[in-house]
Amino acid sequence: MNDLHSRCSQESLHKRYLGPRTGLTPVEWERMTKPGTALTWVTYAPESPERLIAVLQLVGSAGGDSADLGLLIEDAWQNRRLGTALVRHARTQGHRIGATAVTGTVDRRNTAMLRILKGLGARLSFGGGSVIDVVLAATTADEPLEPVAGGRRFREQARPGSVGLAASGRLPLR
Ligand SMILES: CC(C)(COP(=O)(O)OP(=O)(O)OC[C@H]1O[C@@H](n2cnc3c(N)ncnc32)[C@H](O)[C@@H]1OP(=O)(O)O)[C@@H](O)C(=O)NCCC(=O)NCCS
Image (cartoon, rainbow, N blue to C red; front, side, top):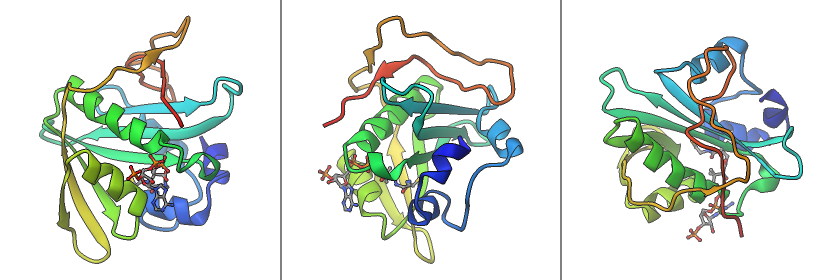
């Protein structure tokens, strides 16, 4: 995970975390992957499964009716519609885990993320300072991921650092 972070520009990391950041601590990673609280998906290109190119997470709210979205794509893989596919995936997965909405806080200069969210019909409001608060209705109405041959299911693995995945699949890229 931190190799992925090291391949991201400071600008991308700043957009993701809204502050200076170089990587994740083991405690943060454990929190991101804690069964019952958070779900994290990692993405890799089929030719290099050991090299992660994106990380998507949903962290449940205290009341459990919404899930907060976090997304980081390696710079070299940006602007290829991966972000669009992953936010759509987060929207359906949010619905699957019982959330009515996926929420996020986005830097107002983050044109790509705001285009994705607006395109999916998210409600945007001024969040103070330089950020926009976003609420996206969780929905089932979406194309499922194309299954990967022999794809495995990883669900609620107990090991810290393990990754919760509803199903593995291919994301359509241009
Ligand atoms: C923001 C991010 C998730 C977007 O994902 P992406 O795969 O690069 O974006 P996509 O290729 O799906 O493009 C989405 C839209 O933004 C536009 N876009 C992409 N990169 C852009 C850029 N650098 N500047 C302006 N517009 C851009 C695309 O043309 C597309 O618009 P359209 O649907 O109207 O054609 C990704 O760039 C990223 O991880 N950035 C760093 C971290 C971050 O910002 N995380 C989000 C905050 S939680």
